[in-house]
Length: 174
Image 1 (cartoon, one colour):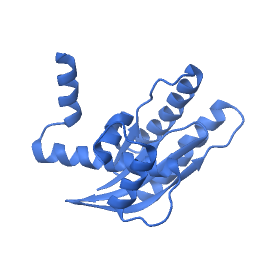
Image 2 (tube, helix red, strand yellow):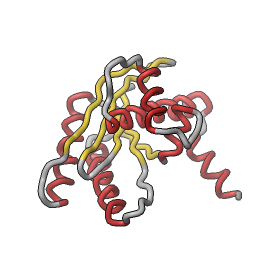
Image 3 (cartoon, one colour):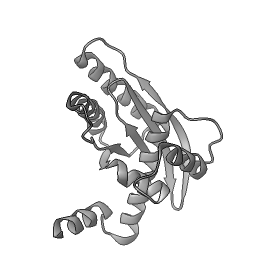
Protein backbone atom coordinates (compact mmCIF):
# COMPACT_ATOMS: atom_id res chain seq x y z
CA UNK A 1 0.00 0.00 0.00
CA UNK A 2 1.38 3.37 -0.96
CA UNK A 3 1.24 6.04 1.74
CA UNK A 4 1.67 9.80 1.32
CA UNK A 5 2.98 11.84 4.25
CA UNK A 6 2.47 15.61 4.26
CA UNK A 7 4.32 18.19 6.36
CA UNK A 8 2.16 21.25 5.66
CA UNK A 9 3.45 24.79 5.40
CA UNK A 10 2.19 28.00 3.84
CA UNK A 11 5.57 28.59 2.12
CA UNK A 12 7.05 25.07 1.86
CA UNK A 13 5.05 21.86 2.12
CA UNK A 14 7.09 18.69 2.41
CA UNK A 15 5.93 15.32 1.19
CA UNK A 16 7.14 11.75 1.38
CA UNK A 17 5.83 8.60 -0.24
CA UNK A 18 6.51 5.06 0.95
CA UNK A 19 5.28 1.63 -0.05
CA UNK A 20 4.19 -0.36 3.00
CA UNK A 21 4.30 -4.10 2.25
CA UNK A 22 3.86 -6.60 5.07
CA UNK A 23 6.85 -5.84 7.30
CA UNK A 24 8.88 -3.67 4.96
CA UNK A 25 8.85 -0.04 3.94
CA UNK A 26 10.23 1.09 0.61
CA UNK A 27 11.10 4.66 -0.27
CA UNK A 28 9.28 5.84 -3.38
CA UNK A 29 9.70 9.63 -3.52
CA UNK A 30 9.96 12.80 -1.49
CA UNK A 31 10.26 16.49 -2.07
CA UNK A 32 9.17 19.98 -1.28
CA UNK A 33 6.34 21.96 -2.73
CA UNK A 34 7.68 25.50 -2.84
CA UNK A 35 4.48 27.46 -2.62
CA UNK A 36 4.09 30.42 -4.95
CA UNK A 37 1.54 33.20 -5.04
CA UNK A 38 1.26 36.63 -3.51
CA UNK A 39 -1.99 36.19 -1.61
CA UNK A 40 -2.93 33.45 0.82
CA UNK A 41 -5.77 32.18 -1.43
CA UNK A 42 -3.28 31.84 -4.31
CA UNK A 43 -0.84 29.91 -2.09
CA UNK A 44 -3.61 27.61 -0.82
CA UNK A 45 -4.73 26.92 -4.39
CA UNK A 46 -1.13 26.14 -5.29
CA UNK A 47 -0.83 23.67 -2.38
CA UNK A 48 -4.10 21.98 -3.39
CA UNK A 49 -3.01 21.63 -7.03
CA UNK A 50 0.51 20.46 -6.17
CA UNK A 51 -0.67 17.83 -3.68
CA UNK A 52 -3.25 16.67 -6.22
CA UNK A 53 -0.46 16.32 -8.79
CA UNK A 54 1.65 14.22 -6.37
CA UNK A 55 -1.39 12.03 -5.69
CA UNK A 56 -2.09 11.58 -9.41
CA UNK A 57 1.54 10.70 -10.11
CA UNK A 58 2.07 8.18 -7.28
CA UNK A 59 -1.47 6.89 -6.59
CA UNK A 60 -1.30 6.53 -2.79
CA UNK A 61 -4.24 4.95 -1.00
CA UNK A 62 -3.72 6.69 2.35
CA UNK A 63 -2.29 9.95 3.64
CA UNK A 64 -0.87 10.93 7.00
CA UNK A 65 -0.60 14.62 7.87
CA UNK A 66 0.79 16.50 10.83
CA UNK A 67 -1.67 18.21 13.15
CA UNK A 68 -1.44 21.93 13.72
CA UNK A 69 0.37 22.89 16.89
CA UNK A 70 -0.14 26.21 18.60
CA UNK A 71 2.87 28.34 17.83
CA UNK A 72 3.89 31.55 19.53
CA UNK A 73 2.41 33.47 16.64
CA UNK A 74 -1.34 32.77 16.24
CA UNK A 75 -1.29 34.16 12.68
CA UNK A 76 1.33 31.58 11.68
CA UNK A 77 -0.72 28.79 13.25
CA UNK A 78 -3.80 29.91 11.30
CA UNK A 79 -1.88 29.98 8.01
CA UNK A 80 -0.45 26.53 8.77
CA UNK A 81 -3.95 25.24 9.46
CA UNK A 82 -5.17 26.62 6.16
CA UNK A 83 -2.26 25.04 4.27
CA UNK A 84 -3.09 21.79 5.99
CA UNK A 85 -6.72 22.15 4.95
CA UNK A 86 -5.74 22.60 1.29
CA UNK A 87 -3.69 19.38 1.37
CA UNK A 88 -6.48 17.49 3.17
CA UNK A 89 -9.03 18.66 0.58
CA UNK A 90 -6.83 17.42 -2.27
CA UNK A 91 -6.47 14.02 -0.57
CA UNK A 92 -10.18 13.81 0.22
CA UNK A 93 -11.11 14.68 -3.36
CA UNK A 94 -8.84 11.84 -4.55
CA UNK A 95 -10.54 9.38 -2.18
CA UNK A 96 -7.59 8.81 0.15
CA UNK A 97 -8.04 7.65 3.74
CA UNK A 98 -6.59 10.47 5.88
CA UNK A 99 -5.01 10.21 9.32
CA UNK A 100 -3.70 13.04 11.48
CA UNK A 101 -0.76 12.83 13.87
CA UNK A 102 0.68 15.16 16.48
CA UNK A 103 4.36 16.00 16.15
CA UNK A 104 5.08 14.12 19.39
CA UNK A 105 3.36 10.97 18.03
CA UNK A 106 5.48 11.10 14.88
CA UNK A 107 8.71 11.50 16.84
CA UNK A 108 7.68 8.73 19.26
CA UNK A 109 6.93 6.35 16.38
CA UNK A 110 10.30 6.93 14.71
CA UNK A 111 12.76 7.63 17.49
CA UNK A 112 11.05 6.28 20.61
CA UNK A 113 10.65 9.65 22.30
CA UNK A 114 8.24 12.48 21.59
CA UNK A 115 10.99 14.96 22.44
CA UNK A 116 13.34 13.85 19.63
CA UNK A 117 15.23 16.49 17.67
CA UNK A 118 14.81 17.12 13.94
CA UNK A 119 18.26 15.59 13.38
CA UNK A 120 17.27 12.40 15.21
CA UNK A 121 14.07 12.10 13.17
CA UNK A 122 15.93 12.67 9.91
CA UNK A 123 18.56 10.08 10.87
CA UNK A 124 15.87 7.45 11.57
CA UNK A 125 13.99 8.25 8.34
CA UNK A 126 17.17 7.69 6.34
CA UNK A 127 18.03 4.54 8.26
CA UNK A 128 14.57 2.97 8.07
CA UNK A 129 14.27 3.65 4.33
CA UNK A 130 17.91 3.04 3.37
CA UNK A 131 18.32 6.56 1.99
CA UNK A 132 21.89 7.76 1.51
CA UNK A 133 21.35 11.21 0.01
CA UNK A 134 20.70 14.28 2.10
CA UNK A 135 17.08 15.19 2.69
CA UNK A 136 15.69 18.66 3.19
CA UNK A 137 13.96 19.07 6.54
CA UNK A 138 10.43 19.31 5.12
CA UNK A 139 10.76 16.23 2.91
CA UNK A 140 12.28 14.24 5.81
CA UNK A 141 9.29 15.29 7.91
CA UNK A 142 6.90 14.20 5.15
CA UNK A 143 8.60 10.79 5.07
CA UNK A 144 8.50 10.60 8.88
CA UNK A 145 4.73 11.16 8.80
CA UNK A 146 4.31 8.44 6.14
CA UNK A 147 6.39 6.01 8.25
CA UNK A 148 4.40 6.89 11.38
CA UNK A 149 1.17 6.22 9.51
CA UNK A 150 2.51 2.89 8.23
CA UNK A 151 3.31 1.85 11.81
CA UNK A 152 -0.11 2.90 13.13
CA UNK A 153 -1.79 1.14 10.21
CA UNK A 154 0.19 -2.06 10.82
CA UNK A 155 -0.80 -2.01 14.51
CA UNK A 156 -4.43 -1.55 13.58
CA UNK A 157 -4.27 -4.40 11.06
CA UNK A 158 -2.64 -6.80 13.54
CA UNK A 159 -4.86 -6.01 16.51
CA UNK A 160 -8.04 -4.72 14.94
CA UNK A 161 -7.75 -1.72 17.26
CA UNK A 162 -6.96 1.81 16.19
CA UNK A 163 -3.95 2.94 18.35
CA UNK A 164 -5.09 6.58 18.10
CA UNK A 165 -8.47 5.60 19.54
CA UNK A 166 -6.77 3.82 22.45
CA UNK A 167 -4.67 6.90 23.13
CA UNK A 168 -7.75 9.13 23.16
CA UNK A 169 -9.54 6.75 25.55
CA UNK A 170 -6.56 6.71 27.93
CA UNK A 171 -6.27 10.49 27.95
CA UNK A 172 -10.02 10.97 28.53
CA UNK A 173 -9.85 8.79 31.67
CA UNK A 174 -7.35 11.13 33.30
